[in-house]
Image 1 (cartoon, protein in one colour):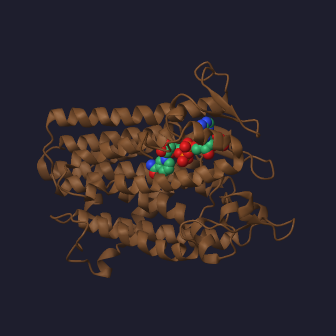
Image 2: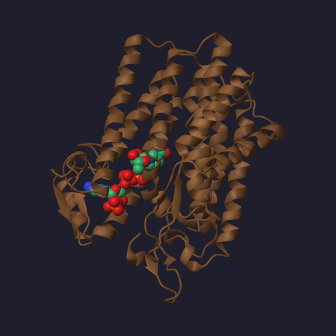
Image 3: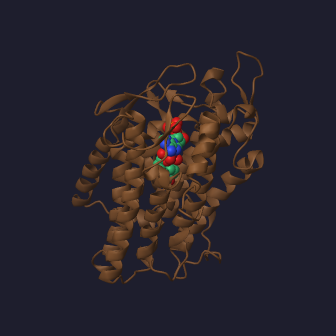
Length: 427
Ligand code: NDP
């Protein structure tokens, strides 16, 4: 969004958002229907022999089969457990980026603690006889329950955003169109006391939930075939590494677009609570009913591909984070930079001189490595890498727009020096 995208109603009010994303009100009407249907469609397709994304999975369950009170209570219990873990006085408290009025919010960094305690509880549960594999059997009902929670939370968020001062609204979610603002997020940092709803949802229930679902799929496969397959172990390990990395670098989430710019509405609530846990675990889910024989050499190649993706992803993110924290740090002090009118500099060598989003490149290489253990016979396990490519291309365009607004001609100079966005010599 550029400054020209905003108009002031009067000086005391938050600027109106005039450039709308995701197709504006039409997208805001369409996506809350399309996304839940996609989740259901893929979960159901994943369990059929054909696992086809092109023909309707049949027989379709009756609507009454989609609802299960126990599944709903389990989902509520899961969110409550994560909320309690978030509130524990463990880990450090850090400051977020400055808000429009110059103040900063405090955030507790204890995602790894939450993960460790959850792992302990799940481990104790399994040794105590908990049949985690039943998550596979009830996956559709669990997803429907997560959707109900996501929609209810979005409605609550929009309702409360109507009662907060205008300074608390998200610059990108103040269009005045209720449907659009509900979808994109009207309030920037909704909090109940010190409990930050957006920050809580961003990493914990969804990301840790994704790992628990993956583990449940591994347990189900072991139940069916005696032991987990190499393909299942690879998918579980790769995604465990990814989530642990996100939790280890939890503080970095405070500088992301999601926390700094985007309001908290349907888009993030549904994405964090339903889409991530149920769609990102699709490969493990697929492997339960579509076992794959993976030769050791193929597995080694896939491991190397994931390692390459992770190396690029982590080095690029760390390079930028180190540079933003302390440009004179010896690790980044030798890199070439461009000065900007804001006083900040842009890296123009190292990873950020290769393409303008090297971290996305690494993320996409990993996404491919997560799908390859599922073989080449089906498209469905490649849904993640396909969707993620679209998401990151769109996200890159949104970030580019914001960087051009922030840095003006310096950004144009950067684009001239580093012409490719994500894929070297391609895009
Ligand atoms: P980035 O970490 O890519 O940050 C973009 C920001 O970096 C820009 O706004 C700018 O901010 C700064 N920047 C851009 N170019 C330069 C440069 N040359 N030199 C110095 N600073 C620069 O943003 P995201 O939040 O999109 O991504 C974070 C990570 O999360 C990525 O690795 C991404 O792959 C991953 N991700 C994963 C998702 C998933 O579902 N698995 C979804 C979305 C993201 P400023 O100048 O203000 O510092």
